[in-house]
Length: 455
Image (cartoon, rainbow, N blue to C red; front, side):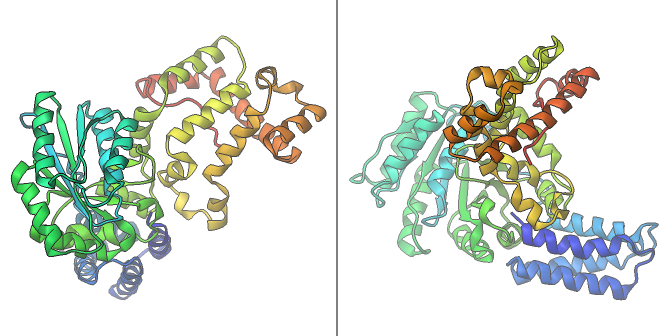
């Protein structure tokens, strides 16, 4: 997300870093480029105008013009104002009430609403330790109820059964009553979507809202619709007392116009963003961290938090003990590291959060992709257990057999062995210096071992 905006803003602001002195003219020139970058990112015009005015007012003030590092000072102003546009801080769900806390999901058809229900249920279970029930009041789309049932099983949430012959209001009320009987903490009600905003749909969802009085009413919107997402959210906000927004499909949106427009136009916070198709791909929306990514400064804090949630700390500790005993890092350990990276959302997701990656050439970033993880794992799976534990025995005939077994070339096997050798060498150095043990202690035993990446 934000790739094009990040690239454009990065090049514009980079020019300012070397300036010993800023003048009103070169500030004006830079702001013109920032304005164009935002418009090209499909940010709503009123948002762009207000943003540029605030930056200009602060940039021409004494705090920037008289700063010892004026270029850096202006970049900080842009950073601060982007954070303000997107809401300043993450606004969490309001669940401090007598259970069950009811969450009502609204949105247009195709925005990823039903998938977001499952993602949110999973996040509540894993991050907030809440028991969750989900129910579908979408009686118009034949597969909607079955889809939610399947997803509920995947995320281990309670599923309240319903069918197309029932009234949506009755379904919602019955689900809440059932959640009370089962002492469930949170119940999420999925509602019908439409291809456009219409009176019939609004009337129905208003009735559901009045019947169950949800503590959270979340609007799910496709980020790839750009500033139209903010306009649609505003239409829903006029009909329903929305408490927040879930921005979906952000992994496919290179512009970011929706994220930068919604808060300003609707006044409602973005609470979560969907960053992939899997039910694990939901992140709380932190404006300051998102801005940090846009400006190429990375988001290490989110990376560490994700590691704490998703990494297998048990296998990391086992690896540390194994190396401490003098046993070498082998291809089975390497395969475990590849799988751990997959759990973290893949190389692309991790790189997106690392500082300075935005400055890499596009060709270099394209070479680093998640398919490579799967290719490497396939090669390792094609080996015998003895070969994985003793990589030094893999010579000509064995390489040929391994390549044939996974449908690849001998060159691919050679490349894997070279990458493995580099990582093995790095792990050995870390172990000799006590680096692995220090890393485990420094991060409370919660951060993954092994820093090598298969680039």
